[in-house]
Length: 272
Image 1: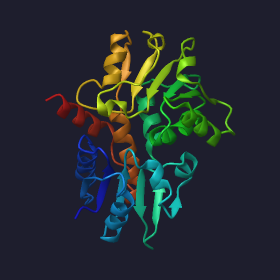
Image 2: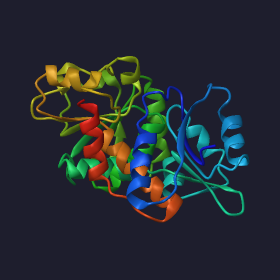
Image 3: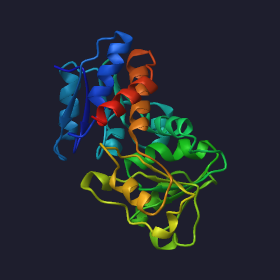
C-alpha cells in the first residue's frame, strides 16, 4: 500500500506521483506515492480508510479541498486562513493536520517567472478551493487582487471571508469590460473539460500576463485562447504544482526538495 497519495476527481492527469518519485530519488527518502479517483460522495470514507490502514500523508485536489478543511483535527495557520486544505499529515498521535501549500507554491512560481510585483493588479478567476488557497498569499504580497466568478455570490462570500483586508475586492463578470490588469490567473477547473472561463476578450491585451493554475501537455485551453488574443507572456500551473508539492514534502519529512530540476524533468518528459 502507498503511504502517501493524492485524492481527486478527476485524477488521471495528475503529475503528483511523478513529482514525488523524483523528490524521493533526490533525497533518498522512501516515499511510496499513489493516486486515487474518489467518487464525489465517498471522499470522507476514502480519506479515513487510507489513514486507518497506515497512510502517512495525502494531497487533495479538486473538488475536495474545502471539504477536507472540515475533516482535519488541526490546521496550520495558512490552511486556517485559506479555509481549504490541499495537504494532510497523520501525526504521531493519529490526528490529522491540514495544511495549504497552494498559495506559497503559486507565489514562488510567479516570482520565478517574474510575473508578480508588489504593485500588480491581479484578476483571480474562480472562487473554489483553488482560489481560496492562493488569494491570501497574493494579497500578502501587496498586490491589488480582484476576484471574479461565474456565480458571483461565491466570489462575494469569499471576499467576506477576508473582510479585514483592503486590497481584495470582487467584481461580476459583466463589470470587467472597462478594467485593466497586470496579471490574470485562472483558478477555475474549466480546462479539465477543455473549456475556457467566460471573460471579456477586451481584458486579454498583449501587455497583460496570463497564468493558468491548470496544466497539461501543450497549451491549456485558457493559454491557447490568451495567445490567440495576442498575449506574449503566458504560463501554466506545472511550476505551481511542483512548488506546492515541495512544501508538502517538507511538511511530511522535514526536508525541502529541489523544485527547478524536477520542473525541468517534467517539461522534458512532456515534450517527448
